[in-house]
Image 1 (cartoon, protein in one colour):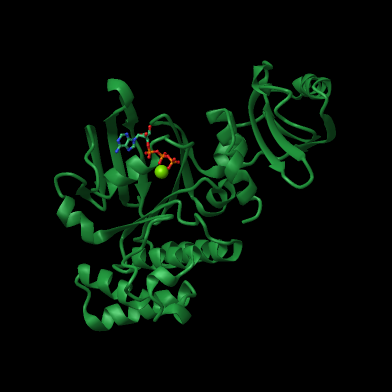
Image 2 (cartoon, helix red, strand yellow):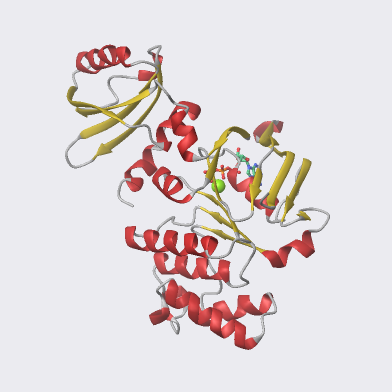
Length: 333
Ligand SMILES: Nc1ncnc2c1ncn2[C@@H]1O[C@H](COP(=O)(O)OP(=O)(O)OP(=O)(O)O)[C@@H](O)[C@H]1O
Ligand SMILES: [Mg+2]
């Protein structure tokens, strides 16, 4: 039996919302992640992913329930836990602007109390592997956002954590840098069976490529949890049909009003004015109705094709919509 690395038991967190309402950011979340796993958290904006990560990294207290990381209770044993974990959030400023990248990493290594020789070795190794050694002596405020993110990631590995949390790690990285980072992180987990990685991402392709298992979270609740493969198999007869449409997609309204349409994701090519719609259907027969609705609205369907189920289709079927803005990126990464 593999050892448990992360466990939550009915984990709940509420916040005060606007005009005295209560927002349930997490609603009785139960997950169990094993050592050696790469585990993905997927869900729309505001689903509760960052809230869960903040609780697991001792930055936020739960309202109810319990959580354990690396065998420590995240509230009762928070200070013991901290040296075994690290967190990197995409888009975060990774240190002090007037310090160089090397000085920033040195600073964080000293917060963890690393001996000089180990710290120096690790800093060099991280700068080499994440490919920013040439900027070792550059002050952080002079780095481009992609290089700041590399520094941010290097900071996450500085204490060689047992459990690493990455909240949208490839945000703002170019295609090659994102690929490089995914490989680096995968190697880090695969080369040591005691490591565990929990990550959130809005890029479905990234989750599919990296994760052993994923949990899909919506409005604070886990709505699915399995390997990407099993989640796809569960879609069974449900099919995603890809339609390329010329003309404004705003005219034909909400296609989800057709019974049998389970979800729609849409992306638009700005230059050619062609929209790509991915329509997840219960049964393919409803597609002819969808096509006539689009034609009646004055737009033109220029191609129709069936696709093999992807993790994104699973997501759309559960959450009811795709990630329009991240779709464009996931196809380029
Ligand atoms: N400090 C806070 N005070 C009040 N409400 C909060 C706070 N932090 C989060 N929330 C609310 O909790 C819910 C979950 O937010 P969270 O940041 O966990 O979502 P998320 O899944 O990380 O979303 P995203 O994909 O946009 O990063 C949202 O409704 C959010 O508005
Ligand atoms: Mg978030």
